[in-house]
Amino acid sequence: MRILTLIDRRSIQRSQRRWMYLGIFWLGAVVTGLVAVLYARLIDYGYDLFLRRTAHAAWLPLIVTPAVAALGVWLTRRWFPGSEGSGIPQVIATLHDVRTLGPRLLTLRILIGKIALSFLAILGGFTIGREGPTIHVGAALMFSLRRFYPARLRSIYGVGLEHKLALAGAAAGLSAAFNAPLAGVVFAIEELTRSFEQRTSGVLITAIIFAGVVSLALQGNYVYFGTIAIDGHFPNLLAAAVVLVGVLTGIAGGVFCWLLLNTPRWMPARLISLRAQRPVAFGAVCGFFIAVIGVASGGHLFGSGYAEARNMLEGHSQLSAAYPLAKMASMVGSYLPGTPGGLFAPSLAIGAGMGNALHMVFGQMQLPMLIALGMVGYLAAVTQSPITAFVIVIEMINGHALVLSLMATALIASQVSKLFAPPLYEALAQRYLRH
Image 1 (tube, rainbow, N blue to C red):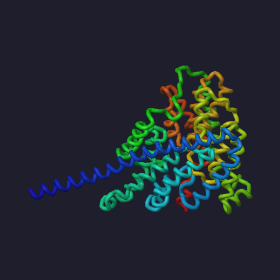
Image 2 (tube, one colour; image 1 turned 45 degrees about the horizontal axis):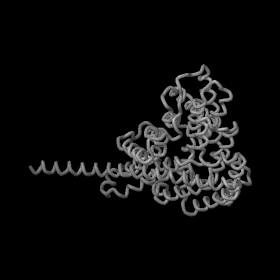
Image 3 (cartoon, rainbow, N blue to C red; image 1 turned 135 degrees about the vertical axis):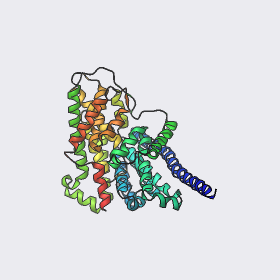
């Protein structure tokens, strides 16, 4: 009887530990979804405010954007080091060495700085998205929840607990940002871990679903860029379009990655010196560059490009064929000073612009079809994660007729991009690991 009592007690203790372990994951996922929705609304509010102010004074960005850039660089370096950029490289670096880098790159201070500084940047019209920061915020939020585990549980699960918390938070952040749970799972495997050996565990998938459910409850069953309607008619030149779009977006995305990773090889020596010695002044120069080309474009280069991409999909946009290149230049200018912000939405907008421009070549094809190919191609080229890019875009498609064409475009673009540069996020993550 005493032995049975001891067995029952141990069974109860194991069950309590398990529920404690799962409960904090689930709580973190719900909070991540809530924060992601509130953050999305904050960014939308900030950009609407920017648009309202510039509608009455088109010259205003020439003053505001450089000032915002300088202030953002100063705040980042002074109070929030580690919050710069998209945030995905910090998450990847932490997953490589969670004990050392987690307490430095995934803190509540970084979480607050990421949200505040990206909001400041969008007030200045910077070309940034909110998806990368949401991933960083989700990882930081979940990683911080390790403190709620009793010391005995932390000793049982060890470093694996912290690793799983960061990974689940990052994937849940993407799920909530795009309202795309499947993309969150694929992103965790393909981009964050670069391995299929990893944790497609129930805990990870449940966290992603919980975050997605919260986003769904608060924002409704929306699709990020709206539904792309594709009918069943496929032109004879579809295969040629897939190859051409894949190659062109792969070159463009590869060049973008090369520019970000090799600044000493193309940037003038004077700017390199300014960036190293006076980073705040360098930020102001980048801000002025963004403002000049943004004002010259009639305001179309400011912000993430979400509105422009949506208008192209709906056939309401009159953007020129030069839009993708100009948007890419604005995107490079936004990231050189280390502005906190994501790459996903601007990349999708650039890809949409490339698809829109190629409609002059493939006039008999449906415009939404070309835009979808351009979006998946450029995003796959920048991230070199073709499956993630494909899953994100396919969830925008009404029907699955274009599935194989999107997959082929993503794979071609990703392979072409590798001829120019290594995977961008992984290369940036290595810098955090070295330092």
